[in-house]
Amino acid sequence: MTSSSPASMETQEQTQPRTYLNFIAGAWRPSASGVTFDNTNPAHRSEIIARFQKSTPADVDAAIDAAEQALPAWRAMPAPQRGAIILKAALLLEARQAELARDMTREMGKPLRETMGDLQTAIDFGKFVAGEGSRAEGETVPSGIPDKMCLTIRQPLGVVGIITPWNFPMAIPAWKTFPALLAGNTVVLKPASDTPLSATHLVEILDEAGLPKGVLNLVTGPGGTLGDSLVTDPRVAMISLTGSTEVGRHVAELCGRDLRRVSLELGGKNAIIVMDDANLDEVVKAVSWAGFGTTGQRCTATSRVIVHQKVAEAFIAKLTEAAQKLRVGDGLLAETDMGPLVNQGRVGAVHEYTEIGQQEGARLVTGGCPLDEGALSEGAYYAPTIFTDVKATMRIAQEEVFGPFVSVIPVADYAEAIEVANSTIYGLSCAIFTEDARLVFRAMRDINAGLVYINAGTTGAEPHLPFGGTKQSGNGHRELGRKAVEEFSETKTIFVSYPAV
Image 1 (cartoon, helix red, strand yellow):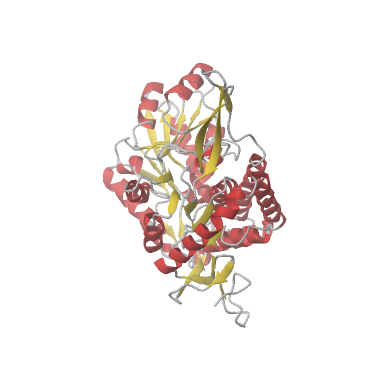
Image 2 (cartoon, one colour):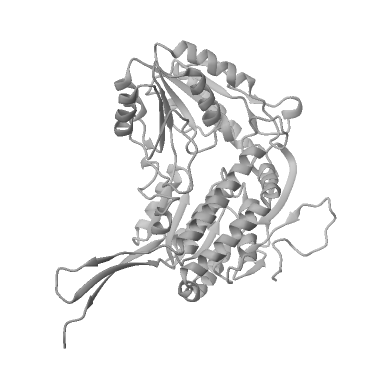
């Protein structure tokens, strides 16, 4: 059974949730299992937004087969033509931004201004990548041998499997899918089960923009079963995953068995260093946004503040006041500053770290509890939480919490601040606030992270610049910018000899 639209064509009463299908070989299809799962609103857990296919390995197999069959014609299409399709998709996203942002807020919780930003990243990067279709793809270099020239070109890898998280459900699928397609690959996309609607919207729009059948395929369902099926299939030339470091290790191990390429963007335990000459009002504003924006559910979220002991007390007082003023609620409400966590399970996971922090001897300053009374009783809400008197070796200073949870670590000087900042297994994002130009340049050198911010928070990637981390925040690959297309392609070196006959 197939359908011409992403939702089932069966007549339903308006009160019934819409049922969405997989997208395989250019058609919307039910899964082989015939089973669906509910996509619910984390702000109102009884509200079912839509139903999606609980796919099986058989669906993954069909999607890979479709991508493999579509590959020869797609890779033969000139890159500028592929770029034109991506540009059209970006413009369609832009035209529907407000509507798509509302759907995203309903399925994952963050306030509308944040989901608008999520979409804006996808739009901006789509426009950027489209232009890369007309950029030189290699170089011509002189040979050391007479009557000979040398050049490089870039070619697609083949079928690419893309596995995306729920916290940026449009931006991340877009910033992986767009460059993979531009490079001439075909794609099987497996979005997070908490946020399949946004990924489905992206696929709808690329289909409308003129993407040929089979070039992009979508399967929804449980990550464990489907992820392993996608990752272990020898027809898949590359896996691109954004997720936890634990999952990244598993995927890297599976891909490593047959030496297939894998690009991993993983966790972070990001810090803002606050020196004693910093403007504390600016720091508090940055931490409030980077620590509690998206309810702390960002790989680049500020979860540690390493503050000079001379200003620690004043900083904690200001940050506590700011956190207590944050308005928590449904992200569709204009007055909301911080929405819910993505699901009820995350509430329990974050609260476990509150208990760990207290057991370790850190001091809870504010928050530290679920918010489940009155208008918040139906949602997965947690109070903005701040701990102080945190030691760098504590679990709350070392492990990724992924919630509205900030640990304040006092230090004596710059040297200790850098030592603490670099003391975790992660190296994604780090920031420093100081008015000392000498420290700025030393920090640029000394901080071990893929992203460094000066007098700004730890979040805020720009589409034309590389994004990624060091250590266990990834495996050295970079997303966004010109590097993105390179990651999804292979360099071929060509030697041409033309001696006289």
